[in-house]
Length: 259
Image 1 (tube, rainbow, N blue to C red):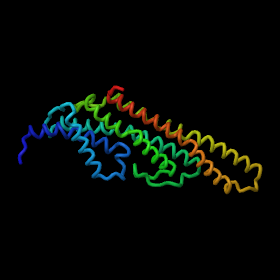
Image 2: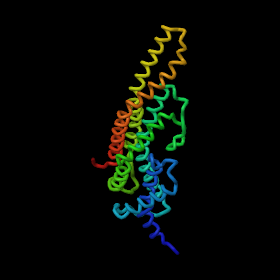
Image 3: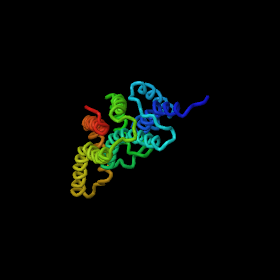
């Protein structure tokens, strides 16, 4: 079977460019990019989503398949998809950061397990928060909102030689500070309460030097830490929901998608 250059360019413009943008998003976004998600499922998901969206997308420009314009368009589509996924990664990373701060305050920094999302060792408190956040993300239909924003991005950011501006990239980098502030805000109540517990243990150690403060203080700190995690869990998930809303709003702002 023979293909002409015109046919190849038309097929490339109609299917490959949306496929690259959607694939870059799936490979960068949390939940979908998890190592527990089979590669075959991710490829099938990208193919099906591209096949569904192609008929309703604006007609892309037709360029030569092996030209420098095609390379620039390819890099632009990868950049748009990666930026969308990276914003959501920062939202989930805020929980990991908050969980690490809490775990080190409790003395559980040594208790870590493999994070299937990123393939690195994280404290068990961070993993607990991450599992709940993933379930909340799916319950709130965050994946559907993400697909909606992706579909709208082809209208506001059509396939072309230009893409995300420098101001948009600077906004993404600047929003990284929000990740650290949100994680610290989630962990601050537990940190403050555990600080008071440690001060109390210090006063007890000064009042009764014969008491083995390490044998008493460590179990007490862990017990109080677990109680505080249970008490503050609704607020942590509420803060995550708000941070997720801000992340999606930033995504819409960068892609110039209205409300």
